[in-house]
Length: 89
Image (cartoon, rainbow, N blue to C red):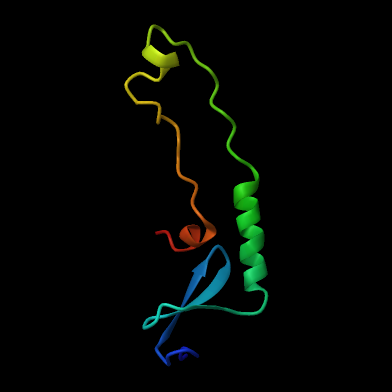
């Protein structure tokens, strides 16, 4: 299959049940009918339910409410987009 934009070779990837064609040359992504709606629905589900907050535990003398030496970043994760989710290995 050839890219409709630059005529490069297209590769098909399957991510979470969705077939995605990507050009090896221009890196363009092309979707078949209904796949954008599927990806949009998956993204909504991915971001809909945030994880529950961590249960408060005993501080046992640790500074700043039990975070120890983590500098206040313990347990925080950057939320990824659906594109990152699709192409992660």
